[in-house]
Image (cartoon, rainbow, N blue to C red; front, top):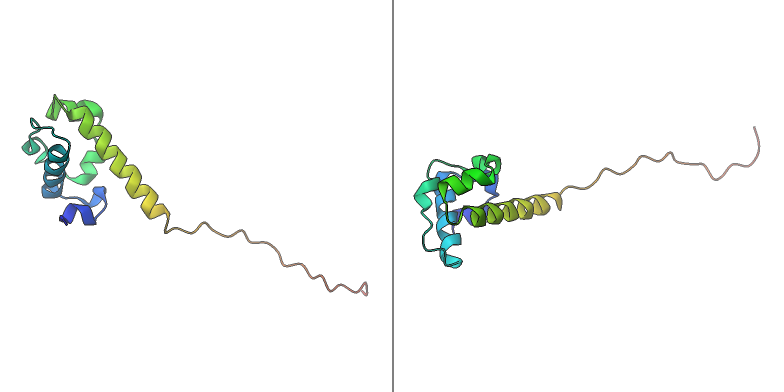
Length: 102
């Protein structure tokens, strides 16, 4: 398994990004994609790039890459949210043993 598959997208370094672009383009038969167009980008930067930047870097398949990476971000977010327990509301304890005596 490739290192990029073992960590959240926002932790990817430049090499992870290029490896993902290569893997994604090969598995989706996007033969014209050039991973080197993303060599100066890390995972955090990917999250900040708009669709126009993906299209500038990869005119033919930039939209495909933009959609795919956003799907990965949502997958990562859902995965990490599953570990967070919502806070339990604090409810005052009621004494049900009240015997009417003051």
